[in-house]
Amino acid sequence: MSNVVIAGMQWGDEGKGKIVDLICPAFDVVARFQGGHNAGHTVKFGDSHFALRLIPSGILHDGMRCVMGNGMVVAPQAFLDELAELKEAGVDPRGRLYISERATVLLPPHVHLDQAREAERGADAIGTTSRGIGPAYESKASRYGLRMVDLTAADLEERLAALLAVIRPQLVALGADVDHPDLDVAALAERCHAWAGDLKPFVADTGRLLAGWVRDGERVLFEGAQGALLDIDHGTFPFVTSSSSTVGGAAVGTGLPPTAIDGVIGILKAYTTRVGAGPFTSELLDETGKHLQRRGNELGTVTGRPRRCGWLDLVAGRYAARVNGLSALALTKMDVMDRLAEIQVCVGYRIAGEVRTDYPADRAALASAEPVYRSFPGWQQDTVGTLEFADLPPAARDYVAFIEEQMEAPVLFVSTGPKREETILRREHPGFELLTAGRL
Ligand code: GDP
Ligand code: IMO
Ligand code: MG
Image 1 (cartoon, rainbow, N blue to C red):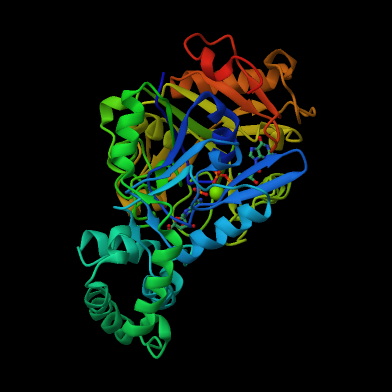
Image 2 (cartoon, rainbow, N blue to C red; image 1 turned 90 degrees about the horizontal axis):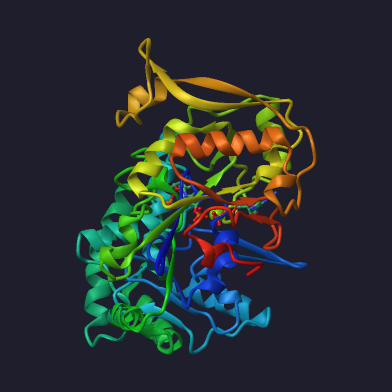
């Protein structure tokens, strides 16, 4: 397996950052392919802690090349802020971090529109991260958006005027204040010129670079953001993000062909969380939900919002596995379940009196679905930092085995704490030696 995709199996925040950071030494390049600074990927090692938003989680490893692919929406200021934070932490990405010249530029007007729309939706709000993600992708799909390469175009001002000609009237209709420098062509052009200068050392034809590296036998780790149920096509529409966060997005969003991908590792949290609105069949609104929230420290990395918590949902999980075509799984946050006396797993949805195991597309059906649970005894034993599978309590091993059987994929990693080193690498699964060979 040379080129491997890391994909979230739920509604994001499964621990993708931790796993990317853990396994990337077995690769030469880490590439993000979709999303923007709505993502928050936490990496912890020793006493250090970093939350990556736009820049791939591999950047913390000396010399690791990192790519921000064409499928991303990149806010220049957010990128520069993140770069400054990295520099402060002693990480220098220069000469090894590349932004696609075809990536969409997320501009301040997109943020105004995201926020005005959410305010207007009131109780029906999606609960976006307010970062302008939806409007930025919309400007790409509607073909008036700017790409990185356009920041140095001779007709930049005309392009910005065209963009504002679409966005300003919408803001006016939403009753938003449009007397703001973010919405002024000349002021925006000036900022874009400055950004173009600052970003110049990073902007490249990343599709061509990646193709060359792959041809030379180098290995690419694709770092997905969000998760399958937030995917614009396969997720719980309309409560989704605006990009393809499943495996297909990795090809479209980097310019490498699907045939270049030869492995997919799904990241599955041992329970479920969701930030923002939308259906969540196995949600727990009781003390157990609060317990998972507290013990799992389930606060949004980007927005600080408390994450909604619930039981593991394998109706959703099996669907995510099908769409992604998994080679293997990483099961994260097992340690958070340590204190529970009983653990439930959702294995069916009761809708209009019938039990379904396929994932419904219909919003009303999904909203009315009642979970059908299978119950497991809790292990009620401390597993934090456990390094060997055999050292997990038998009930925890049974839980893993049930997940493997249902998801039809081997659990290659069991994460037992937020730190890089707090991970069980399961060498007993053949075919993944490069990833599980030793402490990476
Ligand atoms: P991502 O968006 O998928 O990269 O995940 P986030 O970083 O947003 O959220 C995952 C959170 O759980 C972070 O705070 C991680 O440090 C933490 N985390 C990851 N794996 C584990 C684990 O196995 N156990 C515990 N207790 N925390 C974990
Ligand atoms: P990572 O990569 C969790 C959610 C938002 C909202 C919906 C749409 O850290 O897993 P958007 O701002 O994208 O238009 O919001 O998607 N969302 C995430 N939830 N983790 C993320 O990223 C998310 N990125 C977006 O909360 O419900
Ligand atoms: Mg996150």
